[in-house]
Structures are given as C-alpha cells and as structure tokens.
Image (tube, rainbow, N blue to C red; front, side, top):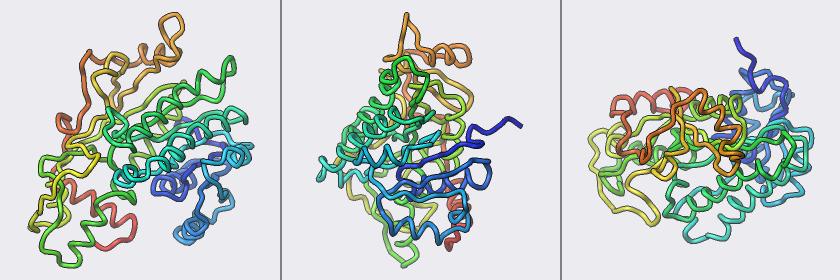
Length: 346
C-alpha cells in the first residue's frame, strides 16, 4: 500500500467546524497517520459542539484555533509549523450573497488572498482550496466570489517565485449530500411533519451530486497528485430535483415556486472555454493552469499531457448532459446510508 500524502503531516482546515471540515478531520484522524489536525474557525460554540460529537474530536492529535480568514495576522500565527492547508471556509448561501455582497467578498475573496499570503509567509507545503460548480460562468455573487478565489489560488503559484513551495491547487465539485446547506434536511423535516406538499423551484432543474466522504477522499487524492495550479474536478453523477424529492418524500405533491434569484436550471463543472486546457482521467478531469506556462507549457500541464487525454474543443461538463445519473432508488439508498452514518432517523 502506498504511503498516504498525510502521513506525519500537520494539517490545518479553515472552516474546520463545517460539514466538510468535520468529515475531513474524521477521515484523517481515523485512517491516516497524520501528526496533527488543526481546526481553524471563528465560532467557539461550534468548536465546543464538535468536541462533543465524536471521541475522535478529542484526540491528542487535534487542536482548535479560533480565528477568521479575514484576519491575515491570525492566519500567519495559525499556519506556523503547518504542512498542508485545506481551505474550506466560505460564505455560501446564494440568496444571502445577493443581499450582502460585501460580506461575501470579505470572506470568499479577501479571505482567499489572506490564506495565500499567510501560506507564502510560512513553511506551508501544499494548499488546496474548495470550490463549487457555481464558479463556472457565474450568474450570482456567491459564484462570482468563488471564481475570483479560484483565480487567486492558481495565481498563488506565480507569487512563490523560484521557491518550490507552497503549491496551490483547487478542487471543484457540485452539491454535497449531508452538507448543512443542502435542501435534503429541509425536505426531510417537512416530510417527517406530515406535509402535504414540498416546495420545488423548477421541475427541470438538475444538479451534480456527491457524498461528503467522496469529497473528502477526492481532496486527499488531489493532494497526492498536485503540482500546483490545477483545478481538480471529480466525475460524479447528476440527479433531477424531482427524483430527489420523490426519494425523500414519496408521493408528496410538488409545488413549483420558480427559480430563485441567482439560480441556474443546470450547473457546469467545465465550460466550453476551459475545454482546450482540460485533461480527462478515469475518475476525474483536471484543468491545467495557463498562467503558469513557460515556453508553452506549465510543469503541471506536462504531467497532465503524459498521463491524461486532452478534451476536445467545445466540451462542456454540465449537470443536464452528464452521462452518469442517479435515479430515485439510488438516491434513496444514499440517503439511508447517510442517515445510518450520522445516526439520523429514516
């Protein structure tokens, strides 16, 4: 068995008390021989709750660090002695972003810049930032802020100059089963209360779908293979929101309320404009960084050309044309599995 990229490493997770942060911490503490996991977040109550939820979160290997990604000096202090940073901190709710744009810019854009600067100023080896399908051809403020964040992290590899580290890369994926922002717990609670109808924006709507565990493992695999500047995208199935509603609340009437402000019918993980620099692998796509090209090719792209297949011009990876789909029964099984894992009632 190959050595884990996390073995003997000090790992810091920004937004560490969030859904992904907790799942990532649980995975690396249970199955990877890391030296330390640092939970960096701004809410002391959520850190206290996290300690109560799982004995792993009281391990001697875990540390809790209060701070905000808006505070660059606090990040520098937190990054001291850290080998790997997973940047998961973000403001994410689409409607909230439309009414509070400056707050989203401060966290998602300025916060990203602060993480990059702090990593450059310390001995960090690798940084992976989590992104979203909403950053592709964005139509809402949240997606636009994450697009800027992605651009900043790719460009961070230029700022290090002749130094080998830190390396910065991005992982981009779609909706996550089990995350706090998911529609799943809302619909589950409505169904449990005996509702007669479920509110649905539009019957045509589709989304990419993966579990928290899949997201965590994909980030770890990306850490192992990154050269710096890549955007890693997992091959994941799509689902129809109507099928998700039927899986959660079988037979309940759907009330269509219309697409919300800043929402798309379908999401993109790769747009046509990025196809010419995207490489396909068995389980993922990787977008090569154009900004790092020297003499026509970047170090990352050299590796991608050797091992991957370049996509044809005009290719798009969209939730409505995806060849992989989850049906009602598959969605229902995933939901039951999630409930078993988290101790929820079916």
